[in-house]
Image 1 (spheres, rainbow, N blue to C red):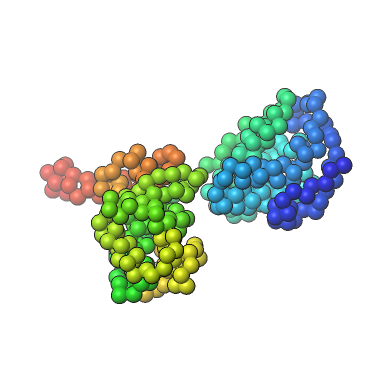
Image 2: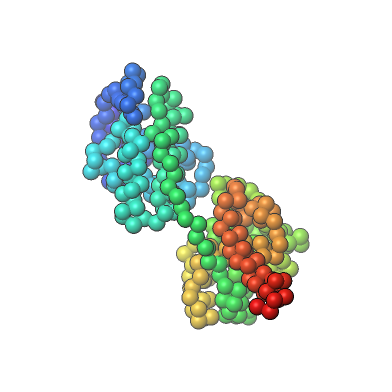
Length: 338
């Protein structure tokens, strides 16, 4: 008998007691399997543990690992009352029922699709890891749930200007906050990418930044305007420390995500506007670039997207810009006096 005591954080988060596992044959989607799976291969908790371990060994970001942990916990919450604890008990219908359950629990379409992606990734990993004979992946028959294309609201230009005006350029914190706002607007980088930048990642002479810790650990270069470069330079000149981080807190420590959110709330309050989302600046950048004629493939590289699917949402908004332009100058309406 084998007890599962691998990653306490996983087991605790799933609220599952140590269990004793034995060997058993199984049947999935009507296919009889001659070969028996070993205890670790068939036990769900053990496999989740190994899956997380595999992802960590690939040096995936902490955010990605947390995403998987959260989805495991959510799935186990559904499976435990059903008594499902082994890989062999999964069927296509069980997975479909789970997706329906999430919808009934008012999870948004994006969240349900994320749950689907996790299960798909997990079973693909399990197949590659254990190479089971004659096994049919239950996910092969489960179609991904549709996600409606939503209009993504960017930070409004007038609100961004108000927040910039609320930064007192005579103080180091005001200079810092102004530089942060301009950098977000000018590059469209993610909040995590902004916070990971070190001084050595800057090339102010040539107006560029190196993003070493992009999503998926991808490396890329982004560019900044002269105004943003000057703002960062003014901020750095006021610094008296030798910390490697580009952005530091009031207490001279590395600025964290919570601190960045506080900056947004404080500057929005000073500007008498609602606090924008950090991702709203990324949307602002994408829309402004598209409206200014930048092609989607160049924008894809600048934003660090693996494909252009996400950008299609922004393209839908630029169609409204085109519609407005046609309404303003449509030849037929002008000719006939409408």
